[in-house]
Length: 119
Image (cartoon, rainbow, N blue to C red; front, side):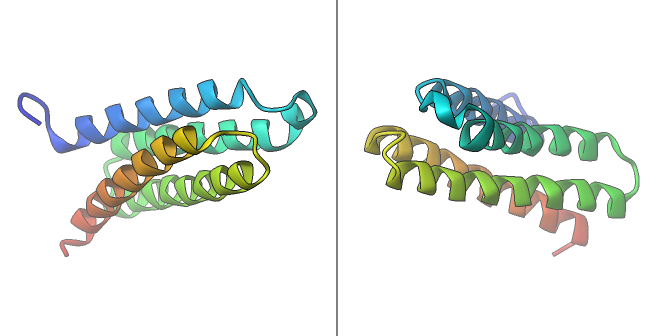
């Protein structure tokens, strides 16, 4: 992470993730446009949007709340990826790439949340 701090690196990973989710879901069945596709995209955007909004807040408790929402949305996308893989909306390579990135983001976001608690 030379030249950039932890929080900026996390934001870049989240941005990469949301773009990956959008690319993957372009291939989903058209009948899922208002179902899984829409839900997964909204949840993926929620990850980075809540992170950014929380980052902008001064009070630790408010920041913590936004980052917890972000973390919850990440968990939601992970389930939707699993569901979509089982339903064969995405292939194994897409699934593994997205899950690996989600795991990396989850660990970083957890670390960021814990830093607010001083633990």
